[in-house]
Image 1 (cartoon, helix red, strand yellow):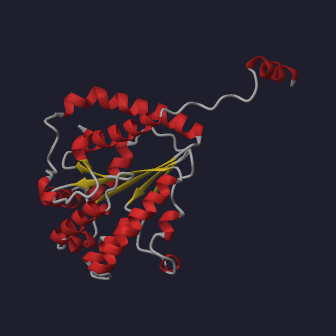
Image 2 (image 1 turned 30 degrees about the horizontal axis):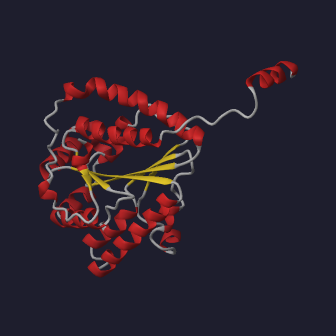
Image 3 (image 1 turned 45 degrees about the horizontal axis):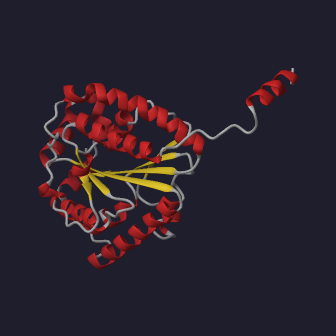
Length: 271
């Protein structure tokens, strides 16, 4: 089932071919037991992943406003050990960051071996927001697609696993979420006028995302288009992919240095 949402390299993507409402004919009750098992399995796998220190895991979350990037971290990754787990958000670049190339601030935030880092938005903003608002032209954008593919290939070849998820929502779903931010006092803090301003560029964002998915999905770091109108299905698909990826590594805890009997004796002798 996961392959249905994975974009192979050199695939021309049209987001109209992917329904944000898709649940693979499943209902929430169908996956509840498996979802709990996946959460427990992820906790187990994170421990051995951290102990082995062979790879780093970079999880990239991209999507329109209200697509649920924060919610994915809160729900799909619930229970993760905060030791060795980092969430990095990318806001408007600082003057120092603008003084470097656009990948600089992202590269220094990638995970160490044994660590898991989530990018809540990422360097892909530099071929999305910048292109939508015409601070770069199409020629620069397509050059950056190649640079990003090369950058991700470099990360992978140096031990970083890159999982990229585009949280795909409908325009109607976004409208509903924006309205709820105004109707529910506890959600007022989430609403900004910038949300409405960016919504006017919906079609252009869809076009630019399609280009990103078409040009930056590679064998080493494919994109996953995750239907996100149903939060439970979004969390299920993402967690299932993460667990599947970690299991495929077949990692083991590192062996102890010395014999157990010898070490036990040394512990006793230390008293």
